[in-house]
Length: 95
Image 1 (cartoon, helix red, strand yellow):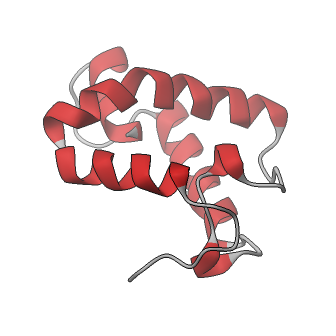
Image 2 (cartoon, helix red, strand yellow):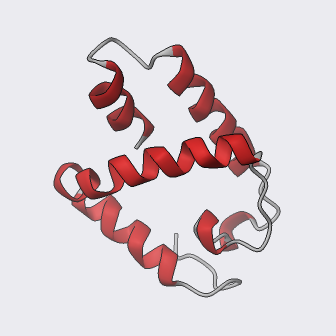
């Protein structure tokens, strides 16, 4: 989603712009350290908000922009993400 956002908002280039690369690195780091591990739901349904407020706002902006476009570019991933959002906390994801 970050790559799609960066390409459409900041222009075509090789790789991500500095701002989007920073956001992707931050999000990856936070997800790697998530205490829920494989049982994690989508962040919006999570009881623990591990993103700083400023970074959470940036992620929301990326998700709002890229979410609808994901249905056209990566429909299976988009549908899986929607289903993950409907899953209850503590329900294990299937691998």
